[in-house]
Amino acid sequence: MKIGITCYPTYGGSGVIATELGKELALKGHQIHFISYAIPFRLTDYVENIFFHEVEMSNYPLFEFPLYSLALASKMSEVAKYEKLDLLHVHYAIPHASSAYLAKQILKESQDLKIVTTLHGTDITLIGLEPSFLPLVKFSIEQSDSVTAVSRFLKEKTSTNYSIEKEIDVIPNFVDTNFYKPENACNFRNHVAPKGEKVLIHTSNFRPVKRVPDTIRIFEKVVKEIPSKLLLVGDGPDRSECERLCRELNLCEHIKFLGKQEALVELLNAADIFLIPSQSESFGLAALEAMACGLPVVASSVGGLPELVKHNETGFIAEIGDIDRMAKYVIDLLSNDKKYQIFSENARNRAVNLFDKSKIIPIYEQHYENVLNS
Ligand code: GMT
Image (cartoon, rainbow, N blue to C red; front, side):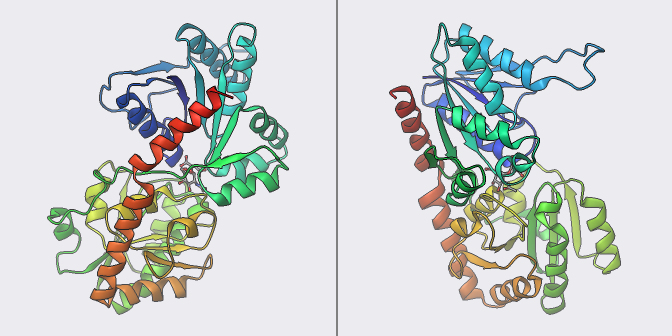
């Protein structure tokens, strides 16, 4: 198949999934054309069958705001026409599904370009609900030839919030469990926890929806009971406030702000427990990556997280903001080696058995076949 993929190329789960999907499909012999304003950050090595088409932006003085969605639509139609694409797979509805609809219309006399839209999260639960976007998001979803969502939660939210009757297929996110895996020798751990302390970790884009201050407050309770350290990986608008909170709580010597990092596997392997107390999370790819490395996850019971984290099996879930309970769960796991080992193995097994790339990529391929034959 010849497939165009559009995603946000910067940090973020939807871009990660889109890029890894493209790479895997290319390895299976499909021809993949990424169309975006920059090369996806996970597209680091040359892979045969992968092509990148940059959306050029004109800065004509009359355009006070960049016309990215339109430039994208134009580029999509050009690539689809000259590369003879079978379909366009767009990740994150805004504005990608709308641009894809325009591209399809541009080509409709000469080509039946199919559009697959994958919904990832805030495109549906947050931004898409703003009155200025809602009608456009609903329209673009309804006009897609097929729609997938990364969790049952997101499928249901889409149907109810936008009154959409169109069938939405749930195709969960995936991880390469041969890459994200437990590793025994970890020098970084000795550096972080030289006295054998336990290590908690959180990775995110530090937006309010991630509730990073909750992570710090959970840790504050844990460190009172168990010698431990907290690694905070990533960057974003809440980082300064979190650094201020650490100073206020006198925790600076126990908490490391690492900023954006590439060596995630190594960092996850330096840790014992992954914390994700989000306000909203349609799937929680970061938690899946941690589980693949054998880390039990303590999460809030929101969105798709309960579909990923099995309570009392691969980790624990608690109400949003219930930091006392989350801290209790962490302390329980960290003070019981046998229980911890079982949870760690369960987490790894769940990632391997249900969410490994080898399980999910064929589902996408079949989905494409169905769309092309419809
Ligand atoms: O919507 C966002 O916050 C960004 C988006 C992204 O690009 O990372 O995250 C969403 O998609 C991820 C990949 O499917 C999911 O793992 C995240 O749970 C989801 N974020 C939210 O729902 C807040």
